[in-house]
Image 1 (spheres, each protein chain N blue to C red):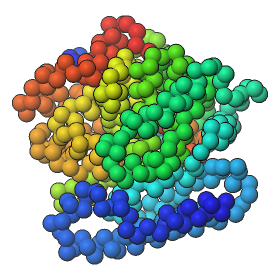
Image 2 (image 1 turned 90 degrees about the horizontal axis):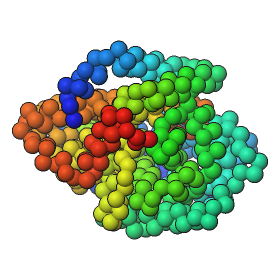
Image 3 (image 1 turned 45 degrees about the horizontal axis):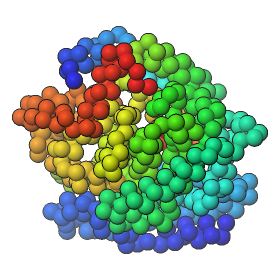
Image 4 (image 1 turned 30 degrees about the horizontal axis):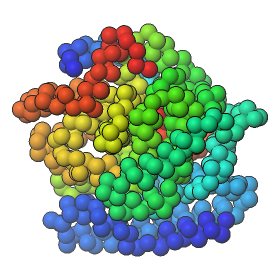
Length: 390
Length: 85
């Protein structure tokens, strides 16, 4: 408990968060510097006050033993408090708060045992009853895929890819991957009403924000190595993006210097995650046979070609899409990015972006042979023709 | 990708019905108590399971909604966020 409190206090005392120094948002604010400097310091005070408020309330909550079970009993409280805290922040302050990302998750699981206990608690909270004998599946290849998690963290998500700040956060609290029996996963899916299939029925993997924990269903072991790696990279990217501030919302500073925060553009985040996990996996010589979000991934692919790989990657990890928006609009017309970001699913975004590219003389057919894009359209065609795919 | 075909799909009754249901669920999830959430979870599961069997190409479009609704249901039930893939 003392350690948890100490960690949180440490997090609150970071007036010059390095995260702010690498964000392009400040660059965009430069033209209005004189005005903005006073707003920033005022804003910083508001953000610091809200962060302190959150820390104080968490400290009070942690004094109640029934809420601070073994580890992670308070996990989730932070998100609730953040939602309350955000109500007191102006859009500009909320923008600045989001820019910080997270130094570390509130619950960090260092051992497999802790992570399995966390999964059990998650199931209990969801009202899912596990088999009495529920424990780590006994298959001999379980440890193989758990090691794969470490390999991906160490060799696939490099400092060059994540950037020094997120890389450092990521390796301070490295992801912990656990594998769970299909029956438990199926029950969890039923509790959430989930039918979403990647391989077979139901979900394949879950990332638990505000922790370093990734869970996967046992049947992932029946997939070939390339698909296992791709799934592993995909989930670890969610974690990296959470640390960087890119999971919860997307943000930009508009042409008038006004900050915009847009929640729930999930299709874009998933498309970008799948695109990059596919590309990273392929860059290591493995060829995944499936694309989990073909429409969303296709849109992400076109965006990458239009705005540039590095620019899009930084936006994905940090959530700050200011530069992406500027480049996108420069190529496809003013207001194009805002329209894209207002769409609720990838299918609509694809219906929007393809004619727009044609109108702006972008010959997008030249990219059709790219293996990732070909995989997206191949998957869509297979479904359209009544073939498999799930 | 056939843009004309995509337009036709978006004008179909099935598409509009699914959009309306999803919007209603999103709204109801925020307002419902735990029993209401469980009811929505069950309806949603049934709806998307049938769509996946009968109209896989339509399900592909709404797949992201299946996922995000489940994430929201999970958060409402457990108080914690989860990313489901």
